[in-house]
Length: 266
Image (cartoon, rainbow, N blue to C red; front, top):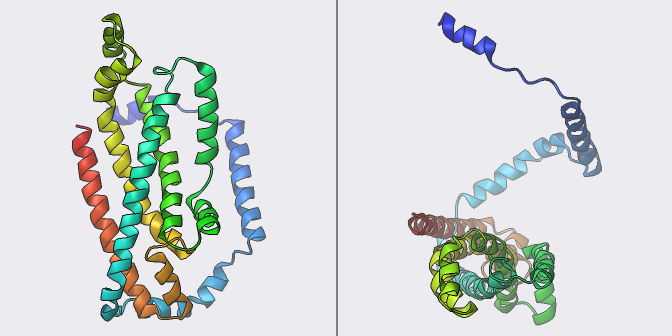
């Protein structure tokens, strides 16, 4: 025990740095300013806690008779997620090959394409949903388009980085044997990157199932639209039914997807 205490005393101690104090002050100051500017009040929440408890109690007593009505819209939500994932991932697959610098050696081409990718990735899914609702109208088409763009932004970033980390040996061997760029991609690159692509696509699908519910809330199709309607008329029993149904579906999809991704990456 005495030896352990002695070793602990001999451990190197980090010196206090001035910039640590500066960042702490900035963080605390930002927290205070944000609280003031947003009129955040813990007392207001506590004063309305009784209303929150009442709403939660009503949601905890779901209207199971509404299940038959909710299931078709839940299936529509899943279809939106599937289509959005497939379309966005397919485009991301091709685009990733064009911006990976170990595949395309022209820095100007990859630079311009990466700049476009970064612009697309800055757009949140709700903004995309609002834009497409304005363009094509209320319905699942707007949601599918929004999820496709969102999926593209998620998958393309992860996938092109994975492509740039592959073993260059097989690619060099194909080129040395007289193969062209297409042969290199088909026989040297594809076998290495397909597990990553499938894994990232499944991950995007998990995100899209959740996002499609929220997109429906702004009119982009799916069960979110009916979730909003039940909240607008204060029918919290039906709201609880929808929330439970979405929770169960998301839980199952997340579990299956995570297990599939683990198997792929072994």
